[in-house]
Image (cartoon, rainbow, N blue to C red):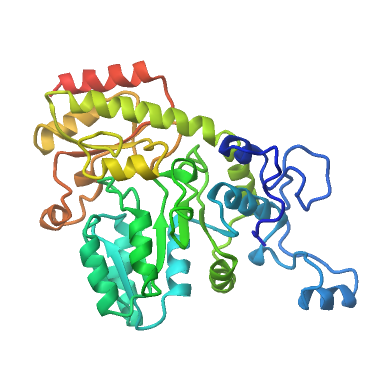
Length: 402
């Protein structure tokens, strides 16, 4: 399930068309003339006779057995994502963290070795620092741009996987996916990219050389802040290994959630264009403002990996991180003065969100926060798809209060 099968008819030549039709037009297994993919709400499936069951077990026929193993609705979603990612196969699961966890557990052996980057999603780092060592798995953390260190580690150790985000969270650092893939593949090391911030529309990690691309479907794929999901795309061989463990662990995506994601993906190419536009224009406004001391956004020439981002991305996403010229209190005053964005975690939805890492991680000792450069004046702003002039006016008025 989730393998490409006539997913890209000749008349589907763009990501926008694929987002609307892939997995549904011409190749949907559900026998219906309905435009929308039906939600198959069942926990299990029956066989007409024992002969059909044996044929299924011996792989002479393809059908469904139990929803933990997949459903017709989730299969459509997997095929749609595969078409956008340019992947042979995709597995969808219950959340982005579920995708990260099952992928690592399935592909990194006991006593294995992982290389990752220091700037990454906090929960991902917690898995690697607190849980994987219990399995004897060691983790080396490097700076996002330190390819020399990456090459040294993969040459000196039996490294199972290089796993990173690109762009990273929250500083939006970008790795040269083509270069790191070449370095790792010389030693048989798998490369997995978490492309959630980039989206499958702005960046094609598999085409750049990565073995796996992982997405939190909760963000831009879902796009409406109303569904949790995760997905992993890559070769049939690798995804099959992950699928086997996933079916045992049971982090299944509900068919209703799969339907919401299918529906949302039909407008994703339109939404992402607006996210890209709003964020780039606001990053430029913020960088020029005297009350903003620094802006982190791959679309700006000041970004350390701007040239890499230009080479491997077609858009830079809706997330902008920046530092207010002030302390904790001034930053809080700025955030509390904003009217349009919600003070909330996550990103990628239609609505703008604003997040101050210092207060979001208030339960973490300040010294530990500073160790990860989560300074008191740091702001992570997810620009939604509201009117740009409204967002700009709101941000500038809030900056005027500090």
